[in-house]
Image (cartoon, rainbow, N blue to C red; front, side, top):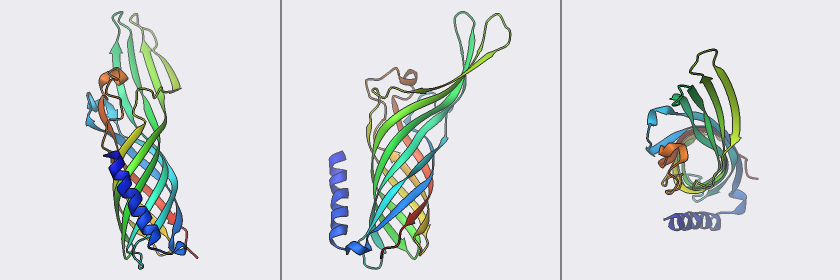
Length: 230
């Protein structure tokens, strides 16, 4: 399925480029935010909250129709996904209590290839997306209260996560709406999701197995700017 989707996407880009003049192709920039969480069969789903992350990168708009109504737009974006952990309490057999909370960040390189319709400035866009996991890190706060009482102690840590138990290659999709002004500035609201789980099927220990069948999911709000062609 991965190969078929990107063969089709590559064919769309090649067809678009071959059917237009080079001066009509426009380079652009994009920056905004992800509002991300997890989809799929997530155990203990209530303890995993949405989180906000950065996205930004470059894009190339290739007209298919001379009037700009239809175009193909591949993009390369750095994208922070993940989730927040609600404060969760654990009690050891010795009676020590720990409350853990924090944020898990998955840093991706996203490459969507979008078919874009521009109807008088109103934008509709959709297409496949390939994602590569660059790295992952945790920001964790742990509050410990001993069984004998006394003041609780709090520790904070930021650690880079081992990604060997995760699927680093991911195929997904993106769809969105927006508005693009004549000067090339646009505001876009998008949704992006994955077709596959991001935890490897043989990795049952990751987050105690809660995320074994989890997929990335996020809403995106971003500004784009297509530099005018000469």
